[in-house]
Amino acid sequence: MPDDVALVELLHRDLRNVTWPEPEAIRATARRRSRRSAALAAVSVVVVAALTATLVDRGGAPPPPAGAVDGPGEIVAEAMLEPADIPVPTGERLSETGLDEPVRVDDLLQVCAGEQGRPAEEPRSRYSRSQTLMEPPTEPATTVGSVLTQEVYRMEPGAAGRFVTDLEGTVVACGAWRTTRQAYTERGMVGAEVVHRWYVAASGFAGDQALLLRHEASVPPDQATGRPPGYAPLYEDRLVVRVGDLVTVLIPSGRLRTDLPQGQVPEARVTEEQVRQMARVAAERMCVAANPGC
Image (cartoon, rainbow, N blue to C red):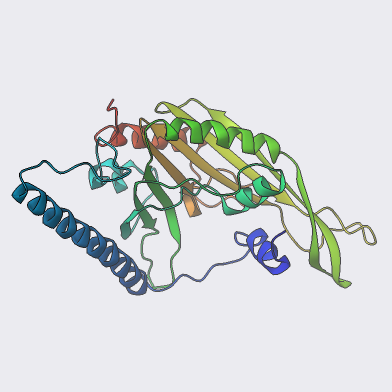
């Protein structure tokens, strides 16, 4: 069972204004991570080159490294969505690459999976590339949020298809997950039941496999007063698309969200069809790096 405070924070991550770090601070973090990944890759190249030279000197061909997989490696930048593919204006783009990263869709869904007896450990990717597209800067300058986060993972042959199928099973198992946690009310802190519901809102609309996952979380009214304990319902969408051995996870936010109820709709709201079309473009772009290709 996760820590009470952690779950409450997860429940409210989209229910309050988030203060983002300044873009330069985010860029610095991304550069540090990219340098670590690049350094690891450089060391790997040097070690492999030295091993190859030694084996050649001995007159034999080098054996393949343990666990090596034939096929493409690092995910090229051309496999990612471009700002022009997004149906709302965007600002700065932050990106990084990784090795052996967990394939993450929804951290809270993963907690539920463990409690339902399903695998609670995310599978690992061979390579990954991520990007965050920020909101355009405003005048006067203020802190800005994100418009879209995209992760693309390269998985072992056959693992990507199994991952999407298993994800559907986890969503079914977490169709109505209830937890009891402390909540703020007009009577102070009281025990409240949090109801989480995940479901597949759409499927099969892009690539080899595609899911539009919707998460709804709510706190029923206070039994003593009949009124909600001060928490508006939480709504979140994620799109998961597979092309060959690649899986992308798209997390819309800000003006790109279509999952908000009436009364919480941002200006210039996009339609769900526009978001699905964006997922189809993401699948087309992944074709240049997928194995097998499109």
